[in-house]
Image 1: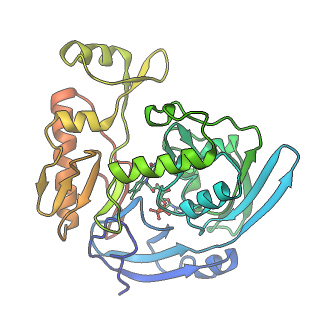
Image 2: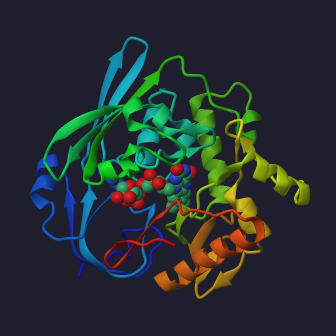
Length: 330
Ligand SMILES: Cc1cc2nc3c(=O)[nH]c(=O)nc-3n(C[C@H](O)[C@H](O)[C@H](O)COP(=O)(O)OP(=O)(O)OC[C@H]3O[C@@H](n4cnc5c(N)ncnc54)[C@H](O)[C@@H]3O)c2cc1C
């Protein structure tokens, strides 16, 4: 049984029945689905195998970057199996701005539109022009425009039931010459008239200080999504917790950092059975010492339970949790 521990960045010891890498759409269609259940993945930085997976894992390795200079900017068509950070570094090296805020996010290019990765004021969906997809159930190949992708906060059409058998094969980006630098975040606002290189370097610097490197300490980035609550609930919480941070989403909704709830619930720096709530960023759970899936689920459920108890807010996982037969809910 193939070993999965090096295939997901949290690193829980786990295996699957069969594993194949595919480098082309045809290879993918030939392989799918020899076994069920079947899981499509990139670099496993948003996936946690909590135990042995009794199915087939297909790893996207479709490569290639095609560049086209057009009036007003550069368009790129990138194979879904390319590494995300390598792509960002390449564009910055070429002098093309637009992706620099998303430096050092682990994972593959093909996974970027799935949860519409975002950091430091930018989401990948803002730069994506088109996504090429194959429906492995029918073999049909088609493209979605940016608006058809229905990008939202850590969300897209690719998370909906209708897209269950779609695999992203290529992602197209549009990097306009006149893109304004995105510097609203405090750490970036301090930069004076920054170039894409300046922002790229600063983002790397800040991320390296705050986040554990998965190559050193197993983790899957933010474990929970930042919850959006009603303005009424937010104002109620503010009465008892005047320092509660919040970002207005609409007239009726406010987004609150999940890290704030987790910290207030007393989990920051806590460890149990090899799983820790990271001391510098409580939104990240880490595999401190040979963690098992059970220990991870127990810690995540304890956090979820306590936050509901204290604040009546339900935290939803950002990561994909997989058990023996597929998705595991908290
Ligand atoms: C240290 C660390 C920091 C992180 N920081 C951020 C951050 O700042 N912002 C952020 O948004 N995320 C962040 N993440 C999460 C993660 O990097 C992203 O979600 C990334 O896009 C996952 O890529 P992957 O290839 O590893 O995906 P995987 O974990 O392999 O897959 C993730 C999901 O996408 C699906 N999928 C993957 N490839 C395809 C495909 N080609 N077609 C269809 N479905 C596919 C999988 O089935 C799965 O559901 C971080 C993770 C870590 C470990």
